[in-house]
Image 1: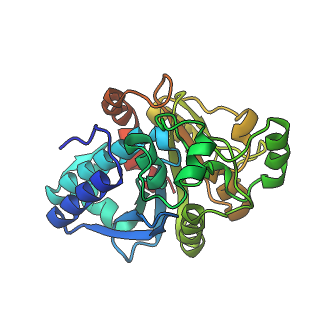
Image 2: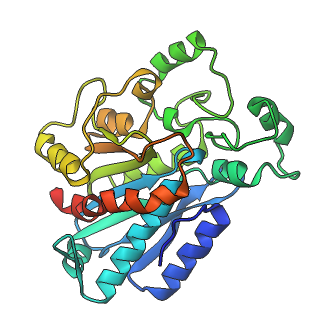
Length: 302
């Protein structure tokens, strides 16, 4: 099965429920709810007794939901190989299931995705305010969550410094870049940081999928988690994306920065594909082919 199509929140839930009904090896729960009450699904692949885990996250930004399709294809691939006792990238899926847990958040920002794909509904309690933030009723370029906060600037990582950047660049609540009133002000970020804190002892690495640029960020203020240089080289080699330094607004408030600074967890922002966001959904297949080995191998790098 392929999932390279535009998925809004309900489409995603339908696909996940179908997979959950089909495969016992998949555990479907949630990390919480958005401002508008939408469930943020969490998929767990792996034995509950496994002592090490990794986390994959996609769609912080509404215009980057092609990454949701990439992770759905990974989940489907994993479950098929596990059920048929097959290997992928030289890895026995039965072994992987027993030894590592993989936590997957395929759509952290379902409210924003629904705005972008479906527009803003008449029963939205903050409809007029959000339309004012957007400057128009066309939400096809919307990136933020339901109330105009860019989720990947809402983590507690150089947050005060980013506020200076915001003021200098007249950034206010809207479709992109606004960091929120305070760190972790948004329920989506509260939910994911709570999960990471709870799983901190077992959680060995994080991959966050974004678009575009075909490069990897694994530093925060020029620093990485100690003794991860070899792992970083493996990550870069497997998807053939170079490791680069962040610039401008990308230097502040992201999950990778927070995971490195606050939690000391190796974390990788993988910028997939090329072009202008939102990328053509047809790129999904080639993006997944490029990342497939990495997604299956990453858990055993630790």
